[in-house]
Amino acid sequence: MDDAKRLSDDLKYLGGLVKRSEGDSSPFAIYLLWALMVLVGFALVDFAPRRVGVFWSIGGPLGGVASAILGYRHSLRVGQLNREEGLRHLWHWGGMMVAIGLAVPLALASVQALSRVILLIVALSYFLAGVHLERPLRWIGALMMAGYVALFFLTSYGWTIVGILVAVGLIVSGLLEQRRGAPAVR
Amino acid sequence: MDRLLEHRVRLAICVLLSRNDAMSFSRLKQLLEETDGSLGAHLMKLEAEGFVSSRKEFLERKPLTWYSLSRRGRETLESHLGALSRLIRHASGMRG
Image (cartoon, rainbow over all chains, first blue to last red; front, side, top):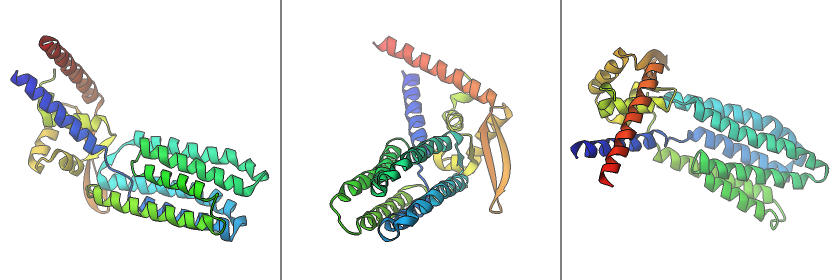
């Protein structure tokens, strides 16, 4: 009976440990990076629509690479290396970029429609990332979906307003995660 | 069942390492809430048996020791966990 109790305690202890070891989220720098990207990239739709394509086609992949580097450096600082988790992120965000690439021909019909379809793809990707990879991204995804709906009603500077809201959402989520998370160790 | 893994801290070290490619001494210490001496002793035992391997490097000029589960460690852990789950099934069957 004592052995069964000890075994049950050990399993609870192990389960708790595994959960704690996997609770670490992305560093604040990644949230901040994408908040700035969204702020500039969304505002461009209102102020310089011709530059949107160039901005995202160069900035998107570069931001992805920068996020991967920041994430890896964060793992080193925390002292926990997990290639499988890195690959999961790569497949998730890579899949989003491919979907966006496939949507680009819609620009022939309407640049505005393409921008909204891309926002919807990104919103869904963030939401699903929040479900499977990193919890706070769920709320960012939901915020983007609300922004997508709002764009049907906002007649002027809609993209800039949505961009500011999403950027603020990203910064607040990043700060909350940073406060919640364990301090970096070596 | 492996005798070395009957201690829950050593079992926990192997379980954590089995779910990651490598973990630093400090990260293990933070998660396991063990003292330097105690954790070091457990890791030494696991390393002596060939269950874990370590490598030292410098990060921002500070020394850092990484630990990984070896193939032998992984195989032993799998068989130990298998034996544990059989034991649990057996215990549940006796109760039911």
